[in-house]
Image 1: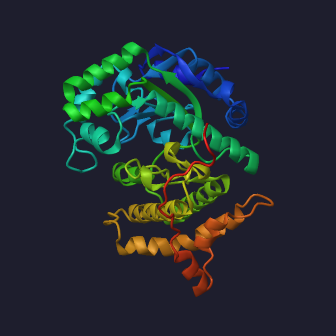
Image 2 (image 1 turned 60 degrees about the vertical axis):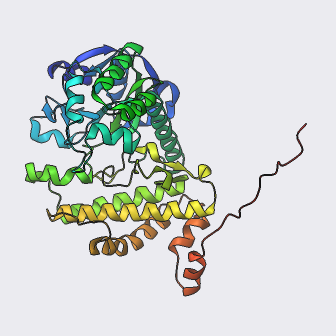
Image 3 (image 1 turned 60 degrees about the horizontal axis):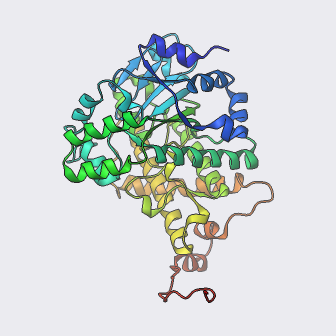
Length: 406
């Protein structure tokens, strides 16, 4: 079978590095791989090629190179459209293989890092190269190997549960492989940081890549255009501007995936991930109705108590509501306004009944909705609101061992 990825990489002038896989979906999550292969048969040949070599872009410039493209502000992600397309205007129609974290392997990475330390992050004061290590706790232009591995294993667990309950893959990135960068590649990256970053930023970034750098390879069933990307792209190409009727399908997709995440036992957001965001944020929610960036999903079992559970759920709803607000503004080609605007309030009113409807419709056969979730949605009487508003408390008490030791 033809390895389309290799052919596209050769035509685009990409270089290759020898692969060293720390994660291989077929070998470690065969059920997920079989489900993906049924959907997209060429993935077997693509994964076979990734076991031997990893394509690396010659530079990190935004735009199109053959069947590869880098979207605006996607500083650590480049995508390859799988099927052959007739021209650049058709790239948005194809499913993709996405590479995250390959930038340190580029020959011109130092020049890219120089740009990152002189360019503001999303109109903020700090440049990208300082915002990432000092605010987001992430190394600029690279992804730590342990984060690649954690993200792909978490995504694989999500898809396995989804297959069990719904008989299909989730509308989310499917993990394919994690490439382990060599010790020499990681050392070159750290040395580049040493010359470009001030002390504290360098120390934090270097500490994060102590276990090494990695490259995560994903499959996604559409162009991974985020809500934050939409306004930028629509300004450059009016054909990418979604119509309100198409937007309705997008919001329905988000509600469906949000409901399924809860039924599967995953919280989209928890407060301790505030600096890193969530899959339902405008920087991660895709306009095809799916969610990307699953690394901050929180399994229910890791949430400490009911107080944190409720707070995480309400924050998740608020974040999705804010995304709907930004998306709605983008449909009209106008700014969304600051958080807390009237559009945000209207979006919460708009979203509430749709989320409840999908929670009920997406419930697995014979499954009951977690009472901690239903208490926040089924508020038919004032008594229900009074009960739901009572903040669970955890009393302060000294630790006492469950039983005597020794």
